[in-house]
Amino acid sequence: MIKIGIIIDKYHLQKKALKLIEYLSTVTKISLYLEEDYLIDYSNFDFNEDIFFVKAKGDLILNLIKLIERETDIPVINSSRGIWLAINRFLNSTLLRQSGVRVPNFTLNAKGFLPPFNDYIIKNIIDQKNYAFSPQIQRINEYLNIADQRALDEVNGEKAKYAYLYYQEFIKSKWEYKVYCIGDDLFYYKQLPLLVNPDKMKTRRKIDKIPELKEITLKALKTTGLKISSLDFLKSKEGEFFLTDINSSPNFNYIKNGPKIIGDYLIKQAKN
Image (tube, rainbow, N blue to C red; front, top):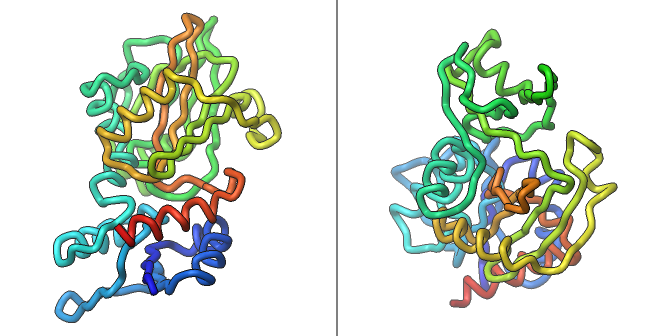
C-alpha cells in the first residue's frame, strides 16, 4: 500500500486538512510530521514514504523538506524552492515579472520612503505565519493607501524584524479572481474584494475558465515549480489581469470534493 507523509503544522491540521487525512486514511497509509512536535535527529533518519505532501510554511518545515530532498529521492509536493518563492513576496514578484507574468508595480523601500505610485498596499515581506488580514486604510485626496497591520508591526513593533516595507501598487478591481491549482487541474472563482466585503465566501462563486488567467497561471506555476497552489488576481479598468498573490498552502476545502481531488492526485504522483 502507498505511504504518504504529510508535513504539517497544528493550525492546518486542525483547521484545513482533517478531511484530506480522513480520506487518505481509507485508501493509503499516512504518516504525520507535525511542525510543533517533530524534532529531527540528523544522525538517524529513515524515511520510507512514497511521497510527501506539505501543508505548512514555517522555518522548521522548510528545513525538514530540504533534508528530505537532499538525502532521499522521495518526491515532495510542494518543494522547498516552490514554497520559498511563494512566501517571499519581493522575490516572487521579481521572478514572475522576469518570466513575463503581469504583476502590479512593487518596491521594497527602507522605512520612511514612499513608493513611486499613489495607490498602494503594504504587505508583509515573508508571508509565513497564519493570520487574518487586518487592513489599515487611509484615503489621501483621491488616493488609497492600505497597510496590513502585521507588515507594520514587523517594522515598527516591539519585536521588529525588518527595516523595509514591501509596497504593491493597488489595482482597483470590481472582482477578485482566484485560481486553485491541483496538478493539471485548475478551478476558477471570483468574489468581491476583501476591502469591499471581508466575508469572502459570502460572495465567492465558481466561474468558467478564463483563457488569459489560465495562461498566466501556468506561466507562474512553471516559474515557481509549485504543483498545488492558489493564485489571486485583480482586473484593472483597462481589462488586464494582475497576479497579486501566490499561495503554496491553499485551503482546498473551498473546492467541491477538494480533499478527495488532492488525495487522488497525491496517490497518482506516488504511483508514478
